[in-house]
Length: 255
Image 1 (cartoon, rainbow, N blue to C red):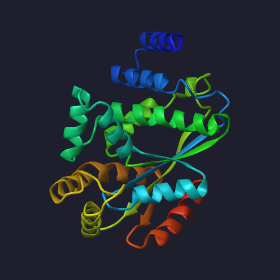
Image 2 (cartoon, helix red, strand yellow; image 1 turned 60 degrees about the vertical axis):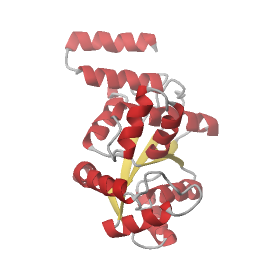
Image 3 (spheres, helix red, strand yellow; image 1 turned 30 degrees about the vertical axis):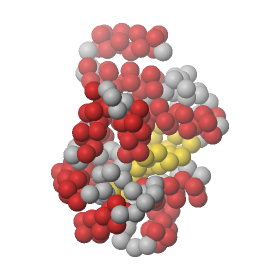
Image 4 (cartoon, rainbow, N blue to C red; image 1 turned 45 degrees about the horizontal axis):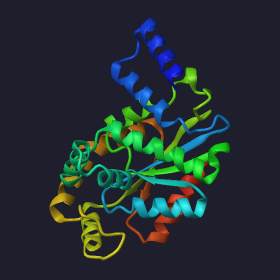
């Protein structure tokens, strides 16, 4: 790790074509990916986006369990991190952002995702084979997307010993549903007891989260559309109906 970081720093000093932010993001990738085996053939990733209450979490779990994919929820990882760091400035910052519907800095979310991707692959034995991941709730804005691109290995070192041979975004699933349906689903969820109930499922926070989606997430959705990566799913139907549509999209992405 130290040697690779020094090599990267030397390269940056010689060509001076990389920004400080890009450099820090690449160092973040190297530190987070330390447990990844060199024998990985390919990691294919599908991001899952949608408004709060669109069903992206439910569908992500179904796709993972039925198709044998790894499922990670950016929101759940952040909530776990919040509990772990509740008495620290970082934890308080995460809590404030989540309760006000704001987006957590990309550096934090990318680190959590990469760490947990590595842990998930190692624990399941997938570190020695190809692996496919469903990541829901990320990227939430263009900065998240740029941050992810900065964390992915550059072509010049993509076959390094501690990195997957190929880490690629296979596509993006967008679960499309109206604001009214989202509000109804989330408020119904907030009145339930169990794992589905969340502290931020209240009318005030939901309104802010929908505003954030419109202002922040819709632009990155447009970027994925431009790149030809977007698979738009009608999420207004029942769970099984929506799942079948999502499954077809996953098959097209070769997950």
